Image 1 (cartoon, rainbow, N blue to C red):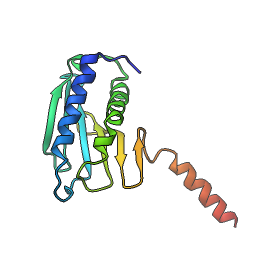
Image 2 (cartoon, rainbow, N blue to C red; image 1 turned 30 degrees about the vertical axis):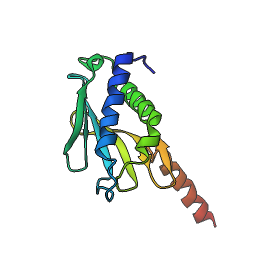
Image 3 (cartoon, rainbow, N blue to C red; image 1 turned 45 degrees about the vertical axis):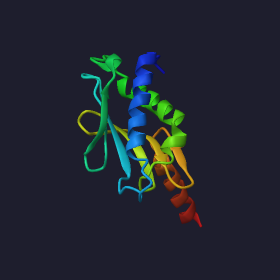
Image 4 (tube, one colour; image 1 turned 135 degrees about the vertical axis):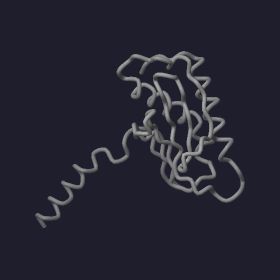
Length: 147
């Protein structure tokens, strides 16, 4: 993992706290199932959107402006996962329709990574939640066909 500056980490934490504040109402759960985090290596923008493309909050991570590392999205995803995990106690209590997730997207709104998934009895941190399932399904069907 790249070593990001403390200032970047603090800015991301403030950003996530704004997301948490937006969705911690004692009312009925919001009909939102995902928080879309959109990042741009050109502008340094970090933005959060709901399912309906309504902007929740945004900030600029100075360190990300004109970022040239080819592993930008991997590094950013790892950093965001770590910061979300650090706030998991608050994030697990958001008033959103479960299961809900934090999804990382690029500036073209294309899926980059699942960052965090919350369900009643399950929290998944990192990686693609479907990763490896095709192999498991193939093995299951092969075994089923043998019987």
